[in-house]
Amino acid sequence: MATHLHYAAANSSLNLLYCNHEQACVASADGYAKAFDYLRPGLAIVTSGPGVTNIATSIASAYHDSVPVVILAGQVKSADINRFGLRSHGAQEVPSLDVIRPIAKSVLRYDPAEIDDESLALVLAKSVSGRMGPVLIEVPLDFQAIDVDNAKSRLDLIISIIHGHRSTRLAPSEGSGHWLQTYWRGASRPVLFIGNGTRISGVSRDRIRSLAETLNVPTLFSWPSADLLDSGHGLNFGCPGGLASTHSNRILQNADAVIFLGARLDLLTTGFNPSAFGRRAHRLVIDVDGLELEKFAKIEFLDCCHSDASEALDWLRAMAAGPVDAHEAWFSQCLSWKQEDERHEMRCLGAGGALNARNISLALTDTLSNMIFVTTASGYAIEGIARFFRPANGNRIIYGGHSLGSMGLGLPTAVGAAAARVGRVVCLEGDGGLMLNVQELATIQANPELDISIILLNNGGYVSISRSQLRTFGEEFGASPSSGLSSPDLEQLSSAFGLKYRLVDSPRALMDTLEEIKQGGSRLMINLMIDADGYRGPSIVTRFRDDGTPYSTDLEEVSWTV
Image 1 (cartoon, one colour):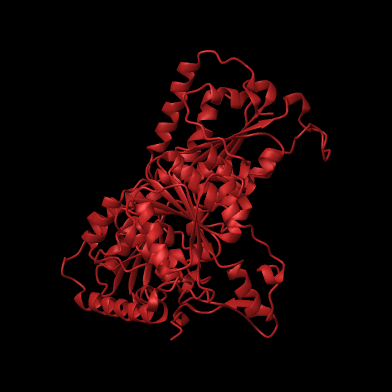
Image 2: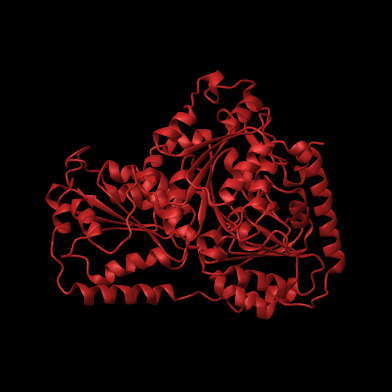
């Protein structure tokens, strides 16, 4: 049902990558766009019916992460489309638009008799303008085969319309200047919080650094934006949240004025309590999505600015800059908290070079340079690595579905990032997550130009799930080999797909393997046996009241187990 779409792609100048599963195809397009810092959209082509239902997780993930992805989907010929309300009519047909509409920025069935070039261009433009996201265009089989007249001139028109919409930016309203004059200018403990919306809007790392240095205030980040400023920069104080450095939380919770730029302040970031995130501060949230701002309507001491982050950044540089030597006492306090936090971290996790989240993450970022680290969005592979990731040496980190948190998207996202060919890729995946898209090892095997290695953080099962089960019920089920879960022999799996296998079960073996990657080694399957304890540092926890209703502990309760 997509045969002409595939034929057209195969005979075009596009660089094609043939994935082994539709979910992986869209996840790879997601990784491709993220590798280009959202400046270039990914393109995926899938068939009808199960082809569309298979992409639901990946397209929802791209939608939540605001990733520009265009999906061309086949469909049965127009005469066979179900117009009778039947459960099933056309062969391999589902109501694709109805299935995908809630989890995409826009959907369209292309009928050349009803859809003109401007309407088509407007749908494509939605993917790369405003708050970006995926769009799906369904093309019935009979329309795929039609010859296109005046293709060059029509394409030029479509491109010009897309560029026109992409260049349109929403600037801050004049009213937001009052907040800066009232609360920011007189603040003694100001904080700048940078979210990933800044990157999505096209803001470069140099501009982020320039803003932080112009405002000269402690600067915090969300996990997806953590690599926008080197960890060694004197203004970078990490990522606050439910699983975070204690000093980052203390800085945020003791600030008296906070600017959130391009940060939607989701529940995971805020510890499931947005109103208390920076509770002692007057807060200004700047976001391009008006719906994201509406959710803050009833929160006290919080103002909203509806603006594109790129436009707002220049506005802040002009409006919010203060004396370079201001806030010395505040900086001194923040640095003291950071040093105290680092001492706790070293005492609890650093001793002896154990193979835990902290030491693995630091070894990766300290040893390797100019790498794109792609980690999954669920379990130890994100909760451990992201927690201790120290951006430096040109390293970047990309999440395989950060907001949705789906297991299994790490490997195909890494494949897409490697296909972009803008850097060497290391995929950080869990032993459980690998199994959800293990077929993409065949995609790597079929594309020898992909510069990618895979580090399996092997903790013998679903440790995040196991810990939650044990904490809640006192028993474990379906989370490890002892409770019904099975994992493959990774050495045999590596051999089957032509990957070089490395077993890492000691700090020395880890450093040797990282040195191999540093010297140009690629296409490795690294079976990294991590410590069984699984402690990843301070975090909020879910508890249950006497009536069984769950609640999350307060951000101020996040502390080291010492």
